[in-house]
Structure formats: structure tokens, C-alpha cells
Image (cartoon, rainbow, N blue to C red; front, side):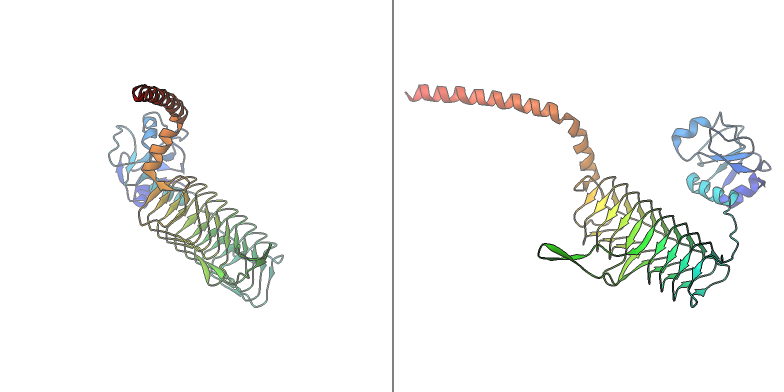
Length: 350
């Protein structure tokens, strides 16, 4: 796709510093970009490449100065980069057909321009919205509802009665609606508690590959609008995750825990069950939240503590061996002093 710099600036809402008639045909990283490419600088550590890059244009922050370069200045270069990628590399158009090798129940309500690839199973009573794409080997259980524009990558499982909103993306191998991990003790054995609820995923959510979201015991496990999960995330039964939250790879959220809006849980972080994490909280990598968090808290560590305290603790940790040796020396000196004091006391008492 060929497009002028002026047109790119209009799409990105940026200001041009340079030749607006420069033709752009692609997007590349700043180190590998050629004369027909547009590139971007969102991280200051890459600013040193501005002089040497061969790129035809650079998306950058408003304060950037680079004489002789074609610049598009925007407030958020990283967001502009994402928009440019989407515009210059649109996804392939799906055929809007249903493959005869798909197994689809007779009473499924199918919207317009739905694409269903081979070896898909869609159970009885399902409702599939307009412009939905379902890749091979997906399983959609009875009574599932899928909103318009949703995209299911290969081998996605959505079990019975779950509700998927519009423009949702679910990546390969994700399982939506498996039984929650619920058991009652019966002496030395465990008695399975039926998991009768559903999973509800709202509009514009993206679910990473091999993520598991368990159905509620009753009612629903609920992922609200705009939330994104990375690969290999575990979300247990009856969890509620607020809008525009971000759950990073290998994070785990135990049953009935509730997250507010815009929560970030970093890689391998965790939350125990039946707690509340407020809006705008951040849990650092491998952090383990064991109690309620008020809005806006930033925590790290296991158990999680305020992030600043965690940083102080981690800087102390490498010093512990030397501190231990110092304490041992001090303890020996104290013991020696105590022995001298006892000897003096005994001498004076006689």
C-alpha cells in the first residue's frame, strides 16, 4: 500500500515536520527501516538511531528535533505506531462462508458474513453474530452466544451457555467455561461441587493462547469490557475482572476474587480467593496478593507489600550474608562483654 506522509499524518492525528509528499509503503523498526518505510521512536533509548536510520519518516514525540528528517509528531508515538500498523497491514478479508466439514446444529442462529472453517463444532441453541470468524477445531457448546465481529483462533473451546461479546479475540488453545475447581471434603475424599454458572466475556476483550477461564459455581465469572489477558493465564470460578484491565502471562486469580477497572497483574503474579483488588492497582511480577487492596495501590513480593518497601527489601537481600556475619561478630563481642561484666560483679560481690 502506497500512501503519502500527509495522509499518514491525518490518520495518526500528527503534525508533519518535513516533506508531506513523501511516499510510504510500509512500516519497520528504526534500525532496519528503508526509504519507503515509516518507523517510530517511543522509547528515549532509541532516539540515538534517528540520525542513522534510513527510514522515509519517523513518528516521534513533539519535542523531537531532527533537521533534514521527515517527522510526524504525536503525543503518544507508541499508540500512533499501533494505528499505523493496523492501517498499513490490514487483516486478510475472511470469505464469509461456512465449510461443509463443520458440524453445526440445525437450530443455530447464524448472523451475516460468518466464516466457519473445517472441523468446527457448534452446539444446539447457539447464536453467532455478524462477521464472526471461527477457525478450525473450535468447540462451541450448546447455548453459547457470540457477538458480532468476534474472532476465534484454532482450537478454542467455549463450553455450554457462555456469553461472548462483540469484537472479542480468543487465541489458540484457550478454554472458556471449564468447571471451576470446587470440591467439598467428605472424610478423606473430595466431593465434586457442580459448577452451574457461566463465563461472560464483554465487548473488546482479548484472551491469550492457552488461557483458562472457569465457569462460576453459580451466576457468572465475568471479564468486563476492554480487558486483555496474555497467554497461560488462569482465572478461577466467580472471578470478576473490571474494565480495561491487563493480566500478564502465567498470572493466576483464585475463586471469587474481584478486580476493579484498569488493574495490571504482571507476569506470574497471583491473588488468593475471596479478596478485592481496587481500580488502578498494579501487582508486580511474581507478586502474591493475600488481602484486599484499596484503589491505586502498587504492590510487589510474596506476600505482596507496597512496591517501594519491596524495592528496599530487595536491595537489602544481597547484603544479608555479610549482615549475618556482622551480627555473629557482634553477638560474640556482646557475649565476651557480658562475661567480663559477670566476672567483675562476682569479684566485687566477694
